[in-house]
Length: 414
Image (cartoon, rainbow, N blue to C red; front, side):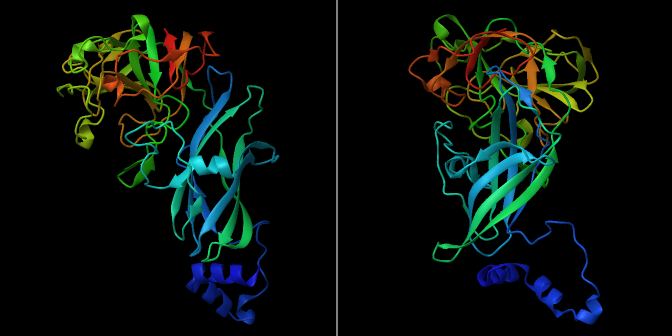
């Protein structure tokens, strides 16, 4: 270790390093045999989920999860490369180079890139972690369908320790965050809405409010909407609203039935919250009203379906403990809770409560891709567009699909 690096680590470790140096050799005894590769590391790493692979309409296997990095030194650290590989055979699945890290790594707690505007736009950031800073790397891999996934993956971080003047003091490589991949197959579901054409908004897998929405709840940090989808009904000429966008009834999604995508038991119902007035975003509601009027179904051990932002009084016929059949109507799409224009927020959860929860992927048994929305059109500006017409273009994945996940901004037909 170079002298400067040694001083950096000693400054970080402080009293621990001093105590270790102060132990007389006679008391220390023979050197302890540590596992190979044991060393002080500039960064610590952790995950909040078990990465779960899912196949999507593009024919790729998607892995979407988060790597949390904390700079444990007093010096700045620049991320140079992140390699994701088989923890046993060391075969490389993916590598994030500096340009990719600049758009996927951000300080923990920073605003969602593009907040209040187009969240899909690129916002590069020099991936330099200040001393004691915590960052999140948003990992979204699209792997070839032929990829043989390992049982366990690990992350190799290459970086540079920086001097106060910004020049490099030395490089390092860490192997961190070994984690198994989930072996639990995603739920394969029926449609959560009635037959027709629907816009898949804020879906997997990229820079959206769902994907990049961190939620620190009761001391637990989660990404509760990682694979959530906002569903908007699409009518003739790709319209989502017709008439006055200030009226709920102008939106084609409003009062559309929502259906049980799988048989299950009702474990939570909330009703009685008023529908918000479109098209301006409402005042952020109390945490208990975030998802508005909603229903939660338990459909398997540790798997729950959330139907959120439902119309006021549309689910008052349901009660906790009630069994529902697949395809049974649960309620109507509304605009309650933290919602600007009528839509259905739908996702799979690992708990019956939205806060805190984890968000695993899911697939649908059968649907047809009709097209793709180009520019970002999402809940908070849908009613502020010059018209309710979506800018739909041709999709390379057009056609029927079975047992896969739709992707963000697909327009599909159930």
